[in-house]
Image 1 (cartoon, rainbow, N blue to C red):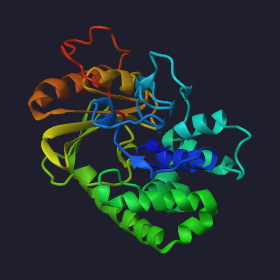
Image 2: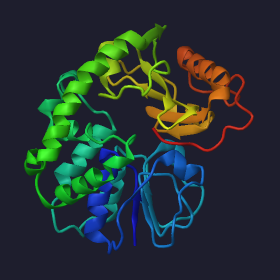
Image 3: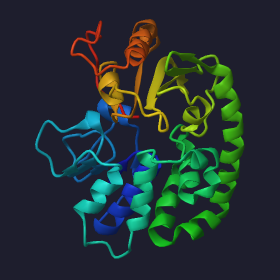
Image 4: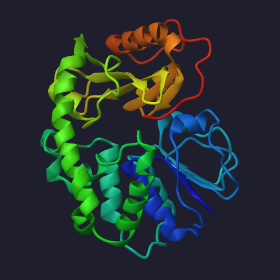
Length: 313
C-alpha cells in the first residue's frame, strides 16, 4: 500500500496521518496535480491518494479542492474544507495514537491562507508557516527532505522539528529568498484595475518566495495573477490566481475560472498550465474575467473549445 500525495505542507500532513492509521508498505509517491489529471501518474490498486485529483484505480481518495469534486462513487472522503488533512483527520477520527489536533489546525490555517499581515511579513513568528515555505514542489531533488518532514512531524513536536539542522538551514534560506522575492515582485508586477499581474516569464528560473507577499505589497488588489514558464519545459506556461487574503472583494471563483483554461483548484486559489502557443489567447481572457470581477457566466466570453483537465493551485 502506498500514499500518493503532493509536496506541500497539506500533503505532508496528510502523509503523517495516513502512515499512522494504514498499513503503508512503500515509499510515499510525490506527484503534481497536473500530472495526475493528465494521466501521467501510474496509480496502482491499493494506492491511497490525498490532496490530489481522483484516479479510479486507487483504493482510497481524500481531497478538498473545488475543481476536484467527485462525479462518481469512490472510497474515502471529499468535502470542501480548509485542508485535505482535515478531511483525512475526520475520516479516521478516534484511530490516532498521537494527538494531531494542533498539526491539522496549522494545515487548515496555511492551506486556507488564514493569516495576518504580521504573519505574512514575518513568517518566522509562526514555526509551521515558516516550515511550510521550505517545501518547494519545483525541485524533485527534495524528495528525501519531504520524506524526512513526514517522519519528524509524525514522531516529535514542532519545536523539535524546527531544531533539525536541515530544517534550520532551509528556514534561513527561505527568509533570505523572501527578501529577494519581494524585490522581484515589485519589479515585475503591475496593476490592472484591482488585479495585480506578475509576469516572471523574462526570468529563468522564475523566483520563488512567500506566496502571500503580493497581498501585502499590493493592498489595493483583490486578486493576483502570477505567470511563469515551467522550470523544465519552456513550451509550457503556468498561471496562478489567488484572492487577496486582506482585501476580500474578489467575486470570481478561481478554481472554476481556471478549469476552463486547462487548470483548476480552490475558489480562492488555483492554477493552470498550457502550451505557450495558447498564452496570447488564454491570458487576456483570464485577466479580463478577473478585472470584471463578476461571478462567471457559462459562456465566459470565448471559453476555449477544449478546456482540458484541471490542475490544482
